[in-house]
Image 1 (cartoon, helix red, strand yellow):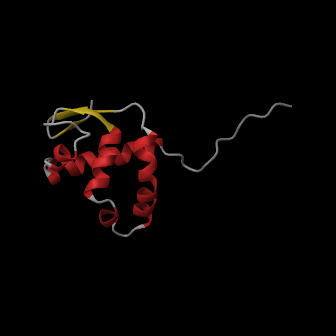
Image 2: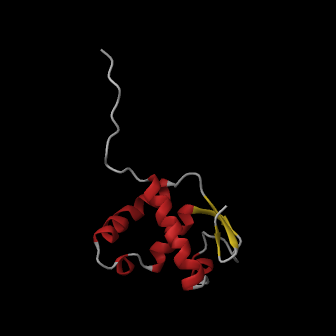
Length: 104
């Protein structure tokens, strides 16, 4: 299990559309932006964490914006955002179609 600042973080197996679909425009905008932090404000980050993290050993629940806001910016929140971003990148379609075998 991944650890951040000595605390275990358990990620969701699935990313719920009810949380993630409304975030898609912001993620697309952040991807194009020279300054993604300007696009991904704290409420958006809180939603990303709520939609990605099933549980953690930090105080409070990952779905609680106050618990996310209480994390240390550099030793807890930033590494968590990096992990969430990596998971999103791994799961998002790459835009490249895999070639299907053809039968003749």
